Image 1 (cartoon, helix red, strand yellow):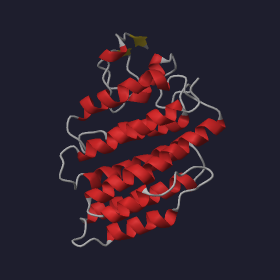
Image 2: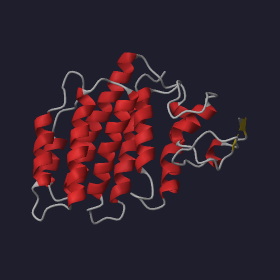
Image 3: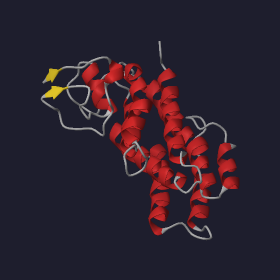
Image 4: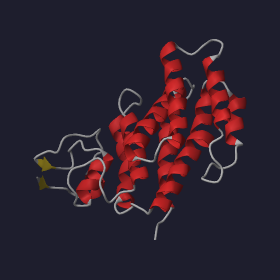
Length: 233
């Protein structure tokens, strides 16, 4: 495989592709595939040099940033994800570091992202309840009863959400719970984070601002930035 890559700021972030014969700045590689390339690793969405938790989040964000969810998805993917690539190379940490990063993600989903979506569909009180929860970490696990109440209220809105969106709320909140219950693996986390972000994007699309969905993605990127500060030398 030949590599012909100009400066990092020239590449675009695609949705991912099979290993091409020649890699150029226009190759539609995902962010994590670019991490593998620039780290000198074999073509992969899960490079060995990268934090598995950060990898799961980057893959999930990359996956939901497509034309089905947001306008000008490629430009948004590139502007949000490309700056993180140098910091992700070499970010793999010890088990205790990865555990902290995982809880940073769960805390973000429950206390920041979910409230944004709940407000968008008209449940500001429930949103504030989640925001007011104490930080979620290994010593203070996810209080699922609060998430369950948010789920139940969303399912019984008047007028109700469309059927497809109801399904996304159920899937997304169940996936959010699974993030804490299931064993820590990059594959499991990727699937659940992707499901949660997808349902949040659908919820945000109910808001009046045309940039509502983008706010979730921008916030998710800030969450990844927080993860990368853990264990940084």
